Length: 184
Image (cartoon, rainbow, N blue to C red; front, side, top):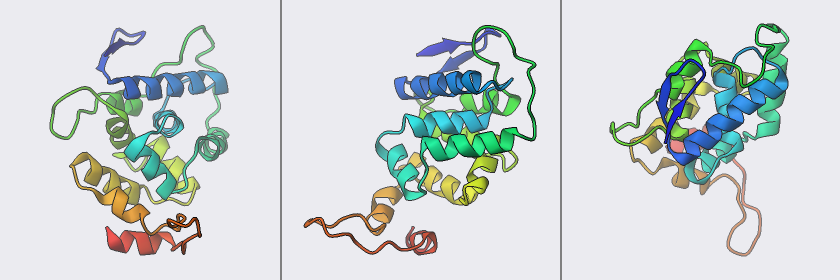
């Protein structure tokens, strides 16, 4: 699905990518930010997470409430009302680049993993700042995300040891993130 923004930029997104983008833009506007930055792309991807993205979010204990709180904490340092009109705020330069991220094999439209990859490829991005605020190392999320984008089944193996209930419903041991990192 091709999306055209206010500046007539064209973005080729799949349905899940479009939904994540809609949530990101709506959240940036609702919060009152003057731009939709990568932190909002991260929010949109996690808020609409399904399948492997949902597993990645669960692995790092990411949810939309925690991300929104971190965004609000970061926003305190850069409050502005330069976008005070109708409609969604424009993309920040980093977010505009992230929305153009192509699939690893070059085929198909941009989806949630590509949005996540684009949002986290710069350590100074808002998305990376949000993750650090939540105690998550962006490079670890990137490493797992790149594995999934490249077709490696790293998430399923990692999640088998996260303390999820076993077949009888008894809780498993919950290792810390260092234990998970060593297995992938």
